[in-house]
Length: 136
Image 1 (cartoon, rainbow, N blue to C red):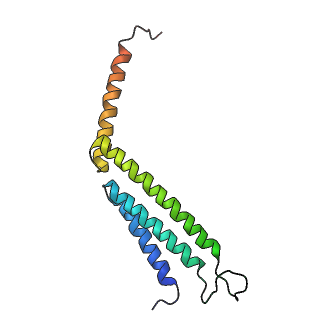
Image 2 (image 1 turned 135 degrees about the horizontal axis):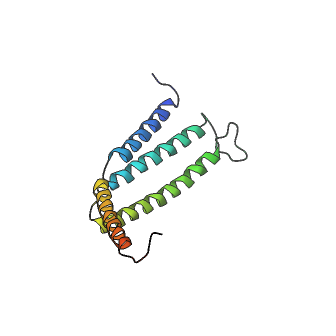
Image 3 (image 1 turned 45 degrees about the vertical axis):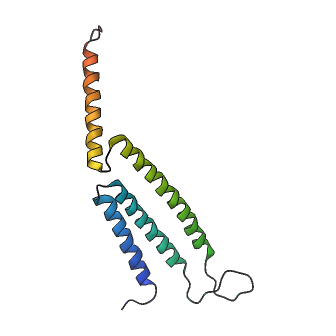
């Protein structure tokens, strides 16, 4: 059986793989954002696991040795704040895309973008040929 903190490493790795799979495989943008959150949570778990010290005391003067490293926990708290703001930005973009295209399916959005760009390129090529400029 697995001893120590190795099961936390395996859990973090499994969560990261689940998040990456969700971001790559799903066509729904909301599910992609959820997959991004899974990957972020796995990083938090990995950082906290790395900073864990068996039978440690808080890093306060007057307590005995060994001390846990407070820097890791501060980094995780900062990463959580950044992750929440990234999720809010991603959801705002998803709302904007839904209001623009009427769908959350990435393939449909790409098809609508390609169709609108194709129409613009045709109108540009027609306008180039009608000018009175010479090719000399």
